[in-house]
Image (tube, rainbow, N blue to C red):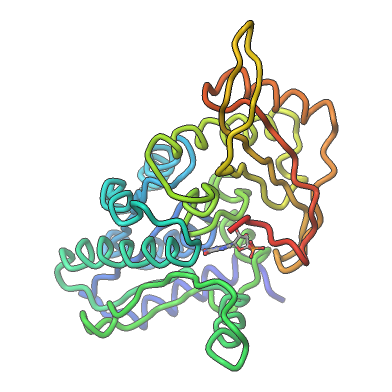
Length: 318
Ligand code: XMP
Protein backbone atom coordinates (compact mmCIF):
# COMPACT_ATOMS: atom_id res chain seq x y z
CA UNK A 1 0.00 0.00 0.00
CA UNK A 2 1.17 3.51 -0.81
CA UNK A 3 1.82 5.60 2.28
CA UNK A 4 3.75 8.88 2.43
CA UNK A 5 6.14 7.33 4.96
CA UNK A 6 6.98 4.41 2.65
CA UNK A 7 7.42 6.78 -0.24
CA UNK A 8 9.82 8.94 1.79
CA UNK A 9 11.89 5.95 2.92
CA UNK A 10 12.20 4.39 -0.49
CA UNK A 11 12.81 7.69 -2.33
CA UNK A 12 15.48 8.73 0.17
CA UNK A 13 17.21 5.39 -0.41
CA UNK A 14 16.91 5.78 -4.18
CA UNK A 15 18.31 9.31 -4.07
CA UNK A 16 21.22 8.21 -1.88
CA UNK A 17 22.16 5.39 -4.23
CA UNK A 18 21.70 7.49 -7.40
CA UNK A 19 23.49 10.67 -6.36
CA UNK A 20 27.24 10.18 -5.94
CA UNK A 21 28.72 10.76 -2.48
CA UNK A 22 30.56 13.93 -3.49
CA UNK A 23 27.92 15.23 -5.88
CA UNK A 24 26.31 18.59 -5.24
CA UNK A 25 22.68 19.16 -6.29
CA UNK A 26 21.05 22.44 -7.32
CA UNK A 27 17.34 23.15 -6.91
CA UNK A 28 15.32 26.24 -7.74
CA UNK A 29 12.88 26.97 -4.93
CA UNK A 30 9.71 28.96 -5.55
CA UNK A 31 8.00 28.93 -2.19
CA UNK A 32 5.38 26.59 -3.64
CA UNK A 33 4.47 23.13 -2.42
CA UNK A 34 6.24 21.06 -5.09
CA UNK A 35 9.71 22.58 -4.98
CA UNK A 36 9.56 22.76 -1.17
CA UNK A 37 8.68 19.08 -0.83
CA UNK A 38 11.37 18.13 -3.35
CA UNK A 39 13.85 20.14 -1.27
CA UNK A 40 12.90 18.40 1.98
CA UNK A 41 13.22 14.96 0.39
CA UNK A 42 16.62 15.74 -1.07
CA UNK A 43 17.74 17.36 2.17
CA UNK A 44 16.84 14.21 4.04
CA UNK A 45 18.84 12.17 1.53
CA UNK A 46 21.95 14.31 1.07
CA UNK A 47 21.81 17.14 3.63
CA UNK A 48 23.61 20.35 2.73
CA UNK A 49 24.87 18.94 -0.57
CA UNK A 50 21.48 20.18 -1.74
CA UNK A 51 21.87 23.84 -2.74
CA UNK A 52 18.54 25.62 -2.97
CA UNK A 53 18.28 28.88 -4.88
CA UNK A 54 15.29 31.13 -4.20
CA UNK A 55 14.99 34.09 -6.58
CA UNK A 56 13.01 37.19 -5.71
CA UNK A 57 11.67 38.34 -9.08
CA UNK A 58 10.04 41.40 -7.52
CA UNK A 59 6.65 39.92 -8.46
CA UNK A 60 5.99 37.84 -5.37
CA UNK A 61 3.24 38.49 -2.86
CA UNK A 62 3.79 41.03 -0.11
CA UNK A 63 6.55 39.92 2.32
CA UNK A 64 6.66 36.51 0.63
CA UNK A 65 10.37 36.56 -0.18
CA UNK A 66 11.43 37.24 3.42
CA UNK A 67 8.80 34.92 4.97
CA UNK A 68 9.54 31.97 2.72
CA UNK A 69 13.30 32.33 3.01
CA UNK A 70 12.89 32.31 6.80
CA UNK A 71 10.75 29.17 6.67
CA UNK A 72 13.33 27.38 4.54
CA UNK A 73 16.14 28.32 6.91
CA UNK A 74 14.02 27.17 9.87
CA UNK A 75 13.67 23.81 8.15
CA UNK A 76 17.45 23.55 8.06
CA UNK A 77 17.68 23.79 4.28
CA UNK A 78 20.84 25.09 2.62
CA UNK A 79 19.19 27.91 0.65
CA UNK A 80 20.52 31.03 -0.93
CA UNK A 81 18.13 33.92 -1.55
CA UNK A 82 18.82 36.18 -4.50
CA UNK A 83 16.97 39.47 -4.71
CA UNK A 84 16.90 40.19 -8.44
CA UNK A 85 13.84 42.48 -8.46
CA UNK A 86 15.72 45.28 -10.20
CA UNK A 87 16.82 43.00 -13.06
CA UNK A 88 13.25 41.81 -13.59
CA UNK A 89 11.79 45.33 -13.55
CA UNK A 90 14.43 46.43 -16.04
CA UNK A 91 13.64 43.51 -18.36
CA UNK A 92 9.90 44.26 -18.13
CA UNK A 93 10.10 47.99 -18.69
CA UNK A 94 7.56 49.13 -21.26
CA UNK A 95 6.28 45.63 -22.08
CA UNK A 96 2.50 45.24 -22.21
CA UNK A 97 1.90 42.03 -24.17
CA UNK A 98 1.26 39.08 -21.81
CA UNK A 99 3.41 36.60 -23.73
CA UNK A 100 6.25 39.10 -24.05
CA UNK A 101 6.07 39.74 -20.33
CA UNK A 102 6.17 36.00 -19.62
CA UNK A 103 9.16 35.58 -21.91
CA UNK A 104 11.04 38.49 -20.33
CA UNK A 105 10.38 37.07 -16.86
CA UNK A 106 11.38 33.57 -17.97
CA UNK A 107 14.56 34.78 -19.65
CA UNK A 108 15.60 36.88 -16.67
CA UNK A 109 14.90 34.01 -14.31
CA UNK A 110 17.19 31.76 -16.33
CA UNK A 111 19.97 34.38 -16.37
CA UNK A 112 19.80 34.96 -12.62
CA UNK A 113 19.46 31.28 -11.80
CA UNK A 114 22.35 30.30 -14.10
CA UNK A 115 24.61 32.84 -12.47
CA UNK A 116 23.87 31.51 -9.00
CA UNK A 117 24.05 27.88 -10.06
CA UNK A 118 27.50 28.35 -11.54
CA UNK A 119 28.78 29.37 -8.11
CA UNK A 120 28.07 25.88 -6.75
CA UNK A 121 31.33 23.91 -6.92
CA UNK A 122 30.99 20.26 -7.81
CA UNK A 123 27.40 20.54 -9.05
CA UNK A 124 26.40 17.37 -10.91
CA UNK A 125 22.61 17.42 -10.67
CA UNK A 126 19.72 19.77 -11.24
CA UNK A 127 16.72 18.79 -9.14
CA UNK A 128 13.19 19.79 -10.13
CA UNK A 129 9.86 19.65 -8.34
CA UNK A 130 8.10 18.24 -11.42
CA UNK A 131 4.97 16.30 -10.51
CA UNK A 132 2.95 13.83 -12.57
CA UNK A 133 0.45 16.35 -14.03
CA UNK A 134 3.43 18.46 -15.24
CA UNK A 135 4.83 15.42 -17.03
CA UNK A 136 1.55 14.90 -18.87
CA UNK A 137 1.17 18.59 -19.63
CA UNK A 138 4.67 18.92 -21.11
CA UNK A 139 4.00 15.92 -23.34
CA UNK A 140 1.01 17.65 -24.86
CA UNK A 141 2.86 20.97 -25.04
CA UNK A 142 5.66 19.37 -27.07
CA UNK A 143 3.27 17.29 -29.12
CA UNK A 144 0.68 18.40 -31.61
CA UNK A 145 -1.35 20.40 -29.09
CA UNK A 146 -1.01 24.17 -29.19
CA UNK A 147 0.91 25.96 -26.45
CA UNK A 148 -1.66 28.22 -24.89
CA UNK A 149 0.70 29.87 -22.45
CA UNK A 150 4.44 29.50 -22.20
CA UNK A 151 5.54 28.22 -18.80
CA UNK A 152 9.12 29.03 -18.04
CA UNK A 153 11.65 26.39 -17.05
CA UNK A 154 15.39 26.03 -16.63
CA UNK A 155 16.45 26.67 -20.21
CA UNK A 156 19.78 25.26 -21.33
CA UNK A 157 21.46 25.00 -17.93
CA UNK A 158 21.64 21.17 -17.79
CA UNK A 159 23.58 21.05 -21.08
CA UNK A 160 25.77 24.06 -20.29
CA UNK A 161 26.83 22.78 -16.87
CA UNK A 162 26.58 19.13 -17.81
CA UNK A 163 23.98 18.46 -15.13
CA UNK A 164 21.81 15.40 -14.85
CA UNK A 165 18.17 15.90 -13.92
CA UNK A 166 16.62 14.44 -10.78
CA UNK A 167 12.86 14.67 -10.24
CA UNK A 168 11.83 12.84 -7.07
CA UNK A 169 8.12 13.79 -7.30
CA UNK A 170 7.64 12.79 -10.92
CA UNK A 171 5.23 9.96 -10.13
CA UNK A 172 3.04 11.84 -7.65
CA UNK A 173 -0.25 13.68 -7.86
CA UNK A 174 -0.69 16.93 -5.98
CA UNK A 175 -2.54 15.42 -3.03
CA UNK A 176 0.20 12.83 -2.64
CA UNK A 177 2.84 15.57 -2.74
CA UNK A 178 1.01 17.28 0.12
CA UNK A 179 0.91 14.03 2.13
CA UNK A 180 4.62 13.55 1.59
CA UNK A 181 5.26 17.16 2.60
CA UNK A 182 3.26 16.67 5.80
CA UNK A 183 5.24 13.51 6.58
CA UNK A 184 8.44 15.52 6.16
CA UNK A 185 7.27 18.30 8.48
CA UNK A 186 6.56 21.01 5.93
CA UNK A 187 4.66 23.77 7.78
CA UNK A 188 0.96 24.19 7.01
CA UNK A 189 1.28 27.66 5.51
CA UNK A 190 3.45 26.21 2.71
CA UNK A 191 1.65 22.87 2.50
CA UNK A 192 -1.81 24.36 1.91
CA UNK A 193 -0.75 27.34 -0.11
CA UNK A 194 -2.81 28.18 -3.19
CA UNK A 195 -1.11 27.73 -6.56
CA UNK A 196 0.73 30.86 -7.68
CA UNK A 197 1.98 31.39 -11.23
CA UNK A 198 5.72 31.50 -11.97
CA UNK A 199 5.46 35.01 -13.52
CA UNK A 200 3.68 36.03 -10.31
CA UNK A 201 2.10 39.47 -10.10
CA UNK A 202 3.63 40.19 -13.50
CA UNK A 203 0.58 38.64 -15.17
CA UNK A 204 -1.83 40.20 -12.66
CA UNK A 205 -0.80 43.74 -13.50
CA UNK A 206 -2.48 44.24 -16.84
CA UNK A 207 -0.36 46.34 -19.11
CA UNK A 208 3.13 47.52 -18.22
CA UNK A 209 4.75 46.82 -14.89
CA UNK A 210 6.26 49.41 -12.56
CA UNK A 211 7.47 49.04 -8.97
CA UNK A 212 4.68 51.40 -7.89
CA UNK A 213 1.99 49.17 -9.44
CA UNK A 214 3.57 46.11 -7.82
CA UNK A 215 3.36 47.87 -4.45
CA UNK A 216 -0.34 48.76 -4.93
CA UNK A 217 -1.19 45.23 -6.00
CA UNK A 218 0.80 43.59 -3.21
CA UNK A 219 -1.11 45.61 -0.62
CA UNK A 220 -4.54 44.92 -2.16
CA UNK A 221 -3.71 41.23 -2.59
CA UNK A 222 -2.55 40.90 1.03
CA UNK A 223 -5.86 42.37 2.26
CA UNK A 224 -7.83 39.86 0.17
CA UNK A 225 -5.73 36.82 1.08
CA UNK A 226 -5.50 37.69 4.78
CA UNK A 227 -9.27 38.27 4.76
CA UNK A 228 -9.85 34.81 3.31
CA UNK A 229 -7.69 33.32 6.06
CA UNK A 230 -9.35 35.31 8.85
CA UNK A 231 -12.80 34.20 7.69
CA UNK A 232 -11.73 30.56 7.25
CA UNK A 233 -12.45 30.77 3.56
CA UNK A 234 -8.88 30.26 2.31
CA UNK A 235 -9.02 26.46 2.33
CA UNK A 236 -12.40 26.44 0.56
CA UNK A 237 -10.98 28.29 -2.41
CA UNK A 238 -8.59 26.68 -4.91
CA UNK A 239 -6.84 29.88 -5.89
CA UNK A 240 -7.34 33.58 -5.25
CA UNK A 241 -5.68 36.83 -6.12
CA UNK A 242 -6.19 40.39 -7.24
CA UNK A 243 -5.78 41.81 -10.74
CA UNK A 244 -4.67 45.42 -11.19
CA UNK A 245 -6.55 46.75 -14.20
CA UNK A 246 -5.08 49.23 -16.67
CA UNK A 247 -7.94 51.66 -16.27
CA UNK A 248 -8.85 54.43 -13.91
CA UNK A 249 -12.30 55.30 -12.68
CA UNK A 250 -13.92 58.29 -11.08
CA UNK A 251 -14.70 58.26 -7.38
CA UNK A 252 -15.32 60.67 -4.51
CA UNK A 253 -13.41 61.04 -1.27
CA UNK A 254 -14.74 63.74 1.07
CA UNK A 255 -15.37 66.71 -1.21
CA UNK A 256 -12.75 65.58 -3.69
CA UNK A 257 -13.21 63.84 -6.97
CA UNK A 258 -10.72 61.00 -7.42
CA UNK A 259 -9.52 59.32 -10.58
CA UNK A 260 -7.72 56.13 -9.60
CA UNK A 261 -7.03 52.48 -10.35
CA UNK A 262 -9.55 49.63 -10.43
CA UNK A 263 -8.80 46.13 -9.12
CA UNK A 264 -10.65 42.88 -9.74
CA UNK A 265 -10.80 40.17 -7.09
CA UNK A 266 -10.52 36.64 -8.49
CA UNK A 267 -11.27 33.52 -6.47
CA UNK A 268 -12.07 30.12 -7.93
CA UNK A 269 -12.98 26.62 -6.91
CA UNK A 270 -11.38 23.84 -8.92
CA UNK A 271 -9.86 20.38 -8.74
CA UNK A 272 -6.88 20.79 -11.04
CA UNK A 273 -7.06 24.28 -12.51
CA UNK A 274 -8.13 22.93 -15.90
CA UNK A 275 -11.70 23.95 -15.28
CA UNK A 276 -12.82 26.30 -12.54
CA UNK A 277 -15.91 28.01 -11.17
CA UNK A 278 -15.87 31.45 -9.61
CA UNK A 279 -16.05 31.08 -5.85
CA UNK A 280 -19.42 32.07 -4.40
CA UNK A 281 -17.94 34.08 -1.55
CA UNK A 282 -20.35 35.69 0.94
CA UNK A 283 -21.42 39.24 0.03
CA UNK A 284 -20.56 40.48 3.52
CA UNK A 285 -17.03 39.21 3.10
CA UNK A 286 -16.65 40.83 -0.32
CA UNK A 287 -17.99 44.09 1.08
CA UNK A 288 -15.45 44.04 3.89
CA UNK A 289 -12.52 43.33 1.58
CA UNK A 290 -13.64 46.02 -0.84
CA UNK A 291 -13.91 48.62 1.94
CA UNK A 292 -10.55 47.71 3.35
CA UNK A 293 -8.79 47.92 0.00
CA UNK A 294 -10.35 51.26 -0.92
CA UNK A 295 -9.72 52.75 2.52
CA UNK A 296 -6.21 51.42 3.02
CA UNK A 297 -4.64 51.45 -0.43
CA UNK A 298 -4.39 55.01 -1.74
CA UNK A 299 -4.48 54.86 -5.52
CA UNK A 300 -7.29 52.30 -5.74
CA UNK A 301 -10.85 53.63 -5.65
CA UNK A 302 -12.90 50.77 -7.08
CA UNK A 303 -13.09 47.00 -6.53
CA UNK A 304 -14.98 44.53 -8.74
CA UNK A 305 -15.51 40.78 -8.41
CA UNK A 306 -14.84 38.44 -11.32
CA UNK A 307 -17.80 36.07 -11.86
CA UNK A 308 -16.45 34.21 -14.90
CA UNK A 309 -15.92 30.47 -15.05
CA UNK A 310 -13.18 28.57 -16.85
CA UNK A 311 -13.75 27.82 -19.66
CA UNK A 312 -14.18 30.11 -21.45
CA UNK A 313 -12.45 32.58 -19.13
CA UNK A 314 -9.07 31.59 -17.66
CA UNK A 315 -8.14 31.94 -14.02
CA UNK A 316 -5.52 34.61 -14.69
CA UNK A 317 -6.45 37.64 -16.78
CA UNK A 318 -3.33 37.44 -18.92
P1 XMP B 1 -5.20 29.86 -16.38
O1 XMP B 1 -5.08 31.36 -16.23
O2 XMP B 1 -4.57 29.35 -17.65
O3 XMP B 1 -4.31 29.26 -15.20
O4 XMP B 1 -6.59 29.37 -16.17
C1 XMP B 1 -4.34 27.90 -14.79
C2 XMP B 1 -3.32 27.78 -13.67
O5 XMP B 1 -2.00 28.01 -14.19
C3 XMP B 1 -1.41 29.13 -13.57
N1 XMP B 1 -0.67 29.86 -14.59
C4 XMP B 1 0.67 29.84 -14.73
N2 XMP B 1 1.60 29.22 -13.99
N3 XMP B 1 3.27 30.16 -15.40
C5 XMP B 1 2.92 29.39 -14.34
O6 XMP B 1 3.81 28.85 -13.68
C6 XMP B 1 2.38 30.81 -16.18
O7 XMP B 1 2.74 31.49 -17.13
C7 XMP B 1 0.99 30.63 -15.81
N4 XMP B 1 -0.16 31.10 -16.34
C8 XMP B 1 -1.16 30.62 -15.57
C9 XMP B 1 -2.55 29.91 -12.97
O8 XMP B 1 -2.13 30.71 -11.85
C10 XMP B 1 -3.50 28.81 -12.56
O9 XMP B 1 -3.11 28.21 -11.34
